[in-house]
Image (cartoon, rainbow over all chains, first blue to last red; front, side, top):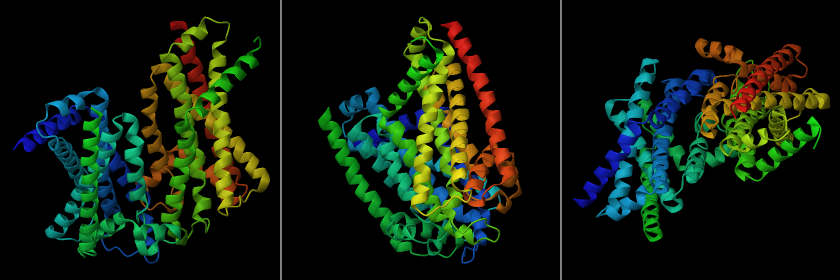
Length: 255
Length: 258
């Protein structure tokens, strides 16, 4: 009960800050939309490349990437807030006041999820209004959004671990850069089969590739690699939950 | 220190040294564009199979992007450093010396241009290392450096204008996403004639950044394209004149206030 009470308090405060501060809210809504516009609008001709076979079309193909990207960056942006809390001294007071400190991590993670759900709803409405084709059933779509939720959780736990270790806003690039790399070293613009050279090799071993390919399968109504994708996403979330909890212990030890 | 040239030299040297002492400000303009080049040239290589694509090397096509992206970083560096000079009172103290105000601007921009040229050399070196051979030859490479100089000057002066008007490094930094939008809504990843969506093609056509990219691209993959060069240099010249005029005016206002 104590854990949940702490989590609820931290989540409420984080969300209150985000939704009452346009400079925090607007970028997380606008950037995914901007990437969706730039990729789906500007590169739609890529769908004509010989060998490109994705029945719902290039807009849907890019939608899945941008949805997963927004989930990951929703987690990272929440990590920025954690770092800000440490820098301002709020987090130290929080550590003193919280009867169960694991609830702090849970609270930040819950806030990241709610924040991303708003972004996802906005992005989905825009994509559907722009004429995106959806081949999957309701169950398939639940699969797609569940994958994104797990990715959001993994990203916020990664960012929380960094923020709690470094405890400064200057840790922003450390949180952001690896996430950017792992996302863009997946098949962003074309399916895995059309990638060539070193990027194909990197994409093959990149766990996000499985999540992305499976997500695209869900949206097309032809689920593929479902077990591998969920396994990869859950493994990432589990590994980063340990990372975040150890970060919490380091923050406690630092006082 | 008597002459205007000496004043510019000292402040330009200070600008370069200050940037070199902040590794993040040196690394980001070099690494981030190269990373984006690697990701895009790997991921979009299949695009060269589209009928009408101007080259069979996507790296050659995409090499234009770092040149423009590097100039955007110059905007940030020049603007943020000048804003810091305002915030710390350095500009106020300078105004008490015989130093001419315009030397501050020229020195700051001179430093940004030097770093812009270093960035251009690195981008070109990476391109050559991965097999890109500029179709316009050695003379074209020289023109490319002249273009890089003007683009850095144009965007650097925009950053300086923002810094002088706002006096805030954060305000200058907030310009970065706006510039990034201009970069992405352009012919950055695909030639304009191959953009399928009419609305996106219209936006890219109206976006001056498309012509800056196409100017660099023409030297690398086409050879000598008078129209692309005229548009690229013409637009860069117009932005340079406008941004230098605005920043000179803003400097006068700022110095009068202090």
